[in-house]
Amino acid sequence: MNVFLLSGLLLILYMGLMFLLAQKLADNSIVDVAYGPGFVLAGWAGYLFFGNGHPRQLLLLFLISLWGIRLALHIARRKRTESGEDSRYRQWRERWGENFVWRSFLQIFMLQGGVIYLVALPIFLVISAPGGALGWRDLIGTLIWLFGFSYEAIGDRQLLRFKENRRNRGRIMRCGLWRTTRHPNYFGEATLWWGIFLVALAVPLGWLALISPLMIGVLLLKVSGIPMLEDKYAGNPDFEEYKRKTNAFFPWFPKS
Image (cartoon, rainbow, N blue to C red):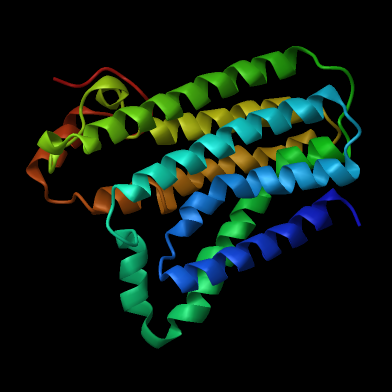
């Protein structure tokens, strides 16, 4: 047994339990709330069995815990303002019909567990072989993480407050960080994982951690992030104007 095997088995069990809870609640969108804590659970379990107290291990676990818990609390709060299951998951429920249960298990919960496992690879590498003393890579990586985390957290907070104001119902968020990019939370998310990668780069085989920020980038830019979210607003005149003036991902000044 090693940290890679233990964490993988634990994630299968964790996502299996989340699947059973989702069936009881008739709400597969709880998988979004479970996402962040999955990293925290896998990371700390691996550390308790295979960690040795190295500062790099504790640094990454602290960063991941802060990010994962904040994200879970944010999504849970957002869900309270919505009615029932997220629209994406409702569409799949209707589309999959009688195959809904097993496809939910495999294509939502087990797939999410696989994503967590691959994105969390830097944590497992550092727990497995933490390397030497902390150095300049760790400092720069932590600063990049802090920038990304702040951008994501502030963007999420601004959007949540905007949506909680009934006067903004049906309107497109265009102020704060959302004036610089259509998805500041996604930009922040991608950025912080580059910081995690840089910290992990100091350990043996640390270059393998590159899969983490690359996977996050592909998911956000091409798969389940921007494309799925913006499909909901296709044809909306306000959104089309916002889209024309504002970068999709990288922050920049709005176009005139």
